[in-house]
Image 1 (cartoon, rainbow, N blue to C red):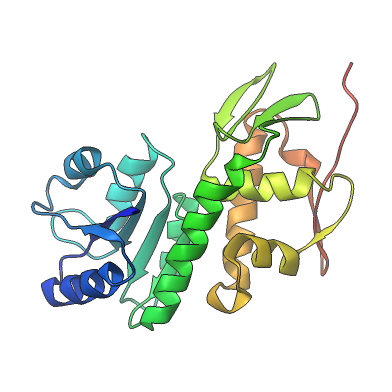
Image 2: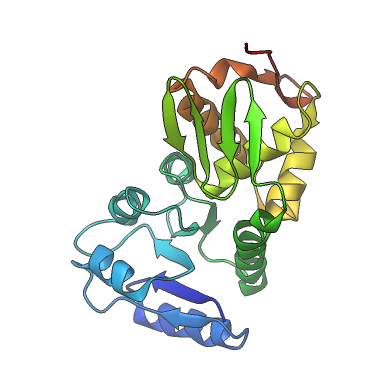
Length: 229
């Protein structure tokens, strides 16, 4: 049974979501003190976090930053505001997905199931390490390291990188990435993928690898391979 932390201050909505998720055999926990969200997160140790943007004390972005500074656990944002910037900010902070309120519960379930499958199943492959452009990519630890340094990626970032370098020097279409990453492209916007790839490239820039992920306008993305001595 997966343990979910639902950070939602609307008690009626919280109870409705909790009841529906419990019917799918998820163990759902809430927050008792919204000034101590991170403390309760560390105590609960969930497998996935669902967090509203508008919260008392501090907003969801604040708590996402706190969580991301210590964990790569998957995070799904909820928002009642109709601001495209909310989704962009969520993805830039390392969220795995985003939902606009009001939402259809079946869509929320689909997003949760796809995220849990992606995060907790794909690492079971026999090959955990991959060499790319002189760097070592560790699929289990979600890290990329070379002589310049080491970076830790989010689940989405490492998954996208894996898709690209497993087909190095070949264009991987945006549609294929979306289908593999979110299972059903109806549940994700094209802009979300753009934000995720841009964030991945920015992280790779820290160890001088961002330039090897290229955008092919109208086609998709390609991970270039170069030989290192």
